[in-house]
Image 1 (cartoon, rainbow, N blue to C red):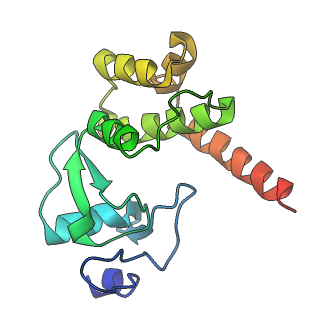
Image 2 (tube, rainbow, N blue to C red):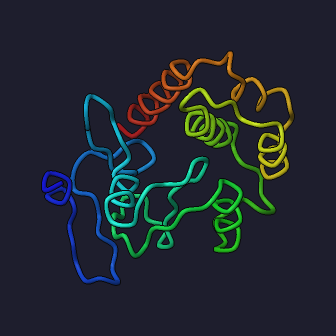
Length: 168
């Protein structure tokens, strides 16, 4: 546990406590535990609040993915997360998203919701389609069980490499 807290920049109780170590492509801190890469804010939540209920996400009230302040973390469904995003004006209401941005969200959603062999329900797929105003076939291809997470990870790596190359 001390290893975890050494990687958190604790400030005042009401400020964000950013993760100081490695962050994934979405900005979330990660920590290795028993050979697995875990999201730091989820580990912090479980250590300070308790177990995360099945099917729930750990959300940030501060909208800072690197934040590990337990006072900024709460559990909610993916629908709660999307509703919070739009309520705070971070949604893409009234403008078109690029295909790359949509694909990244779809892949992240698929990866987060296919852990433990649990398939994504049709109800959840329908909510996501409505939220993103996407066609069924593309979203369906990404979230079905037959799409391997390794493919999604490979696509994400290629996007990151392309983005890093374009910044040169």
